[in-house]
Length: 183
Image 1 (cartoon, one colour):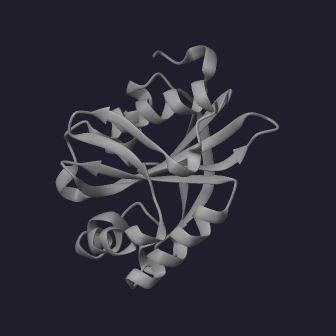
Image 2 (image 1 turned 135 degrees about the vertical axis):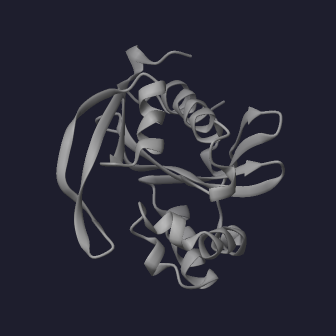
């Protein structure tokens, strides 16, 4: 029997798991966005468009019906701590991109690396993908350490790949192939 991605919960550690996000999670996620707005907006272009729980709910409604995206809450110590998701899911070419963000008070605890590792195992083993990309804003050292620790290959710079706070910014592009993944 195949795993139903619509009812997913992926264990990461005793106090950490990924749970498929739904519109019902909007308030918890928006509260983090609003509380950590200045911190998150340094690297995340969507922050300025998230002005209410209704905005977050609209995003979660969209991704819950879009077959090319699959988004999970990061749940740490039984509280939502951020999001991690698959975007641009291309089943024909067996590739996708991972994106993520984490609450400021959860930084520095190896949460995101562990969540990425769990999601990679799901992507390669259950979804049978061959390639995963991860893009990080140039200068975002904390985030760029994650693909480096997970064995991704740095492919280069996507020039002006993201509009962030009114200016275009370059992105570091990393990739990992199924054959390179260390379980």
